[in-house]
Amino acid sequence: MALTLDIEGPAAPPRLNGELVFDAPWEGRSFAMAMALVEGGHFTWDDFRDHLIAAVQRWESDPVGEYRYYERWQEALESIVEERAIVSEPEVDALAAAYAARPPGHDHGDHDHGDDHHHHDH
Amino acid sequence: MADHSHTTDRPSPAVRAEALESLLTERGLVKSEVLDGFINRFVNDVGPMNGAKVVAKAWVDDDYRAQLLTDGTGAIKELGFAGPQGEHIVVVENSDDVHNVVVCTLCSCYPWPVLGLPPEWYKDPAYRSRMVREPRTLLSEMGLDLDDSVEVQVWDSSAENRYLVLPQRPEGTEDLSEDELAALVTRDAMVGVAKVSAG
Image (cartoon, rainbow over all chains, first blue to last red; front, side, top):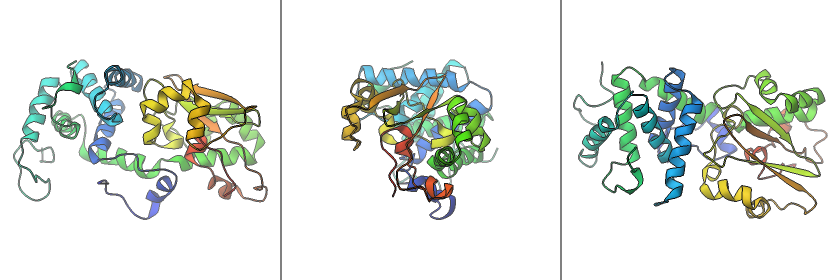
């Protein structure tokens, strides 16, 4: 479990009454990006839900591998930002390919990064 | 839309999410600390304890219970719980004769402001299809055996409605305070795949 959580305090109640909601940090990032874009007025929850339903149905019509909800969520997010001309799919493809080509052991905290890293200052 | 599921050399969703966040950040559409805030809120602050407080209050306060069953969203908002996916919450009440259970067959709609984010099994394709087809069997597999005389009502969430089950107050809890009652109420009971036990 990779999410960093407080052991004490407000972290406790939900976990006493259920498991953690994100299996990996990226799932939380993907979830929060959708939240932020809805809050910013770029699309509504109902619009996002339509894309999520479509992404779920694409998988279910031809299941490959294990069903992972937040993979469908990420797919829905990519498809709605593409549809709304916010970020195009080729842009995501290209940057993701560049990130995927990073050397193994890449870690955000331990050395300098190029300008493509998202934590750099603007 | 490209067919995502078959491309084996496609970067992982983790890397795609990182790339998308970079691009959205560059365009000034998201901020890392805002995303952190959402995650923190939904992981730590919003959770089934909100729903448990709603249920406990309904158990001890008949007026509130009546209001909750007529206007779930309003009654829940009164306790300070509102937010995305909480706009249209319908509360369905269990009784000796009727047991309610919630599903979202199309995706995984869920009343976030009262229950937090859905657990893994709620999002699972098998749960989503089987709860409609064979609710009794699935409930039994999940540890809830219902008498044949009990009618099972399955509520399929939609863009219009999210459902919250008001479980039956367990026997032997007459002397408990509202807070003590809330501590007994589980998420699974409010989805309808379990009953509340007296502890």
